[in-house]
Length: 249
Image 1 (cartoon, rainbow, N blue to C red):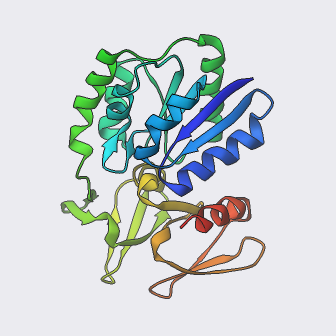
Image 2: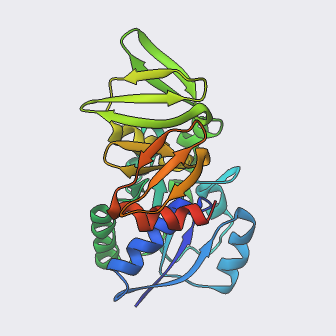
């Protein structure tokens, strides 16, 4: 068995990873811990020796690379988890490290785990970690998202977004102030960017800010009622995962 740990402070991201690992990979991978706070990292690694660690790129006010610098013995493989395509992926790929985009895709997770089985090697070096960390500095204060519109770019506070709705290759953003902004990017692209900020794709056409959920109503998939009174359908195949995440809020 390959013993693994998850270092992740976002409940929905941790629950999704646990769900996929338990459902698809329990025969070969054994979970020995989920670390939810940066303060608990050092103590966990002092007492445990995992073979594999899933690291959220940002944990509270620090980064995985800063935390790793404080762990002298890194004899484990790592898979980094990030919602930041524009910066983190370039840095991680440049150092030949493995990564998964949030929300974690089942097929991409399987591919990453196959590489783990093949490599079974030690962790990354201090130099590699420093190289990635320098590239991640712009992420520290990321609070807005740039939306390409017909007039240019509009910079929108992430917390002001209620939900996003797909419209073929466009995405409609519905904001707390009642405005709707249409962006010339797909919902999948925004799912990757906003998954680490508490957004969840409850349906092929709907990405919801879970902080704005007021009620969940039962049904085959059920539906959510948001703070502005909007009702959003939940796909039946996403219901179980959604409810698990909502329990962690």
